[in-house]
Length: 360
Image (cartoon, rainbow, N blue to C red):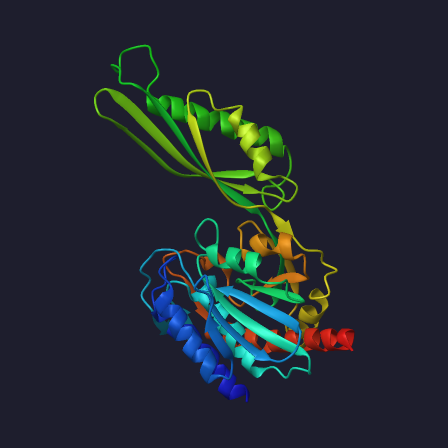
């Protein structure tokens, strides 16, 4: 059984990575994944949002493995070199999704418990349409595992929130020798005020999960000879306790000379380390020879979308090193995929036994 599952997880991961699936362009990959799950014994369908859905086992108690099938842009050549799979989506998050599919097919489930694997669309786009549809149309599962790279020996408890801002400064064009500020100068002055406000807000808190951060993603300026325009594209990362509404209010106080357009993504979300899902993962990682690590992440995931509404026990798990997310050489070791299946299978079986006893 082990060799069969090992072959399956590698084949599924490589097959998914070979199929381009940018956000909102996932249909080919979804169709392929549904076919693979069906061959492994899953009851499959594509839901109303376009998510790939496969269930295995029977009963009212549900363990949901929620991964995502879409990727960010970038042509990363797909290849396996020295036991490492390279390609866009290898680690974020087709490798973890393949681990979900292989582990779900391997586990022995008690009566009354089923596993549902979902390859959600649109996680890499603002609004996460796949997870949002699930949140708004499905009942909460009894246990939720989000498919993101944690390392095969790690478990993620929370993610920062995020909100995107477009700040635009515009003013009549003027001679460079004149006294009036240009649109780029107005935009840059806003950015400086924002940076100063963030330094004051964060104080001596070490930069990371507990700080409010802003990243300048782009800065563009142009003029038609009459009006000059400068635009900043900024992403804020919010720690737990800092809401999107509060950030919008505070930044609005700094907006002299610029117009603000906001695109909210998700509030921060963190589960408790005493979650009933944590102990099964720690035991499974130790049994596989690892030293467990509990982590929090400065990015976001679909945990941010569904967690606050479903309020069910939730963690994130997936093999791979998140430092390769979105990079020009995205990659995941095949050994990590294999270890991930071993750990996840054992954790699911422990969780399923607990749910079965609770339902008795």
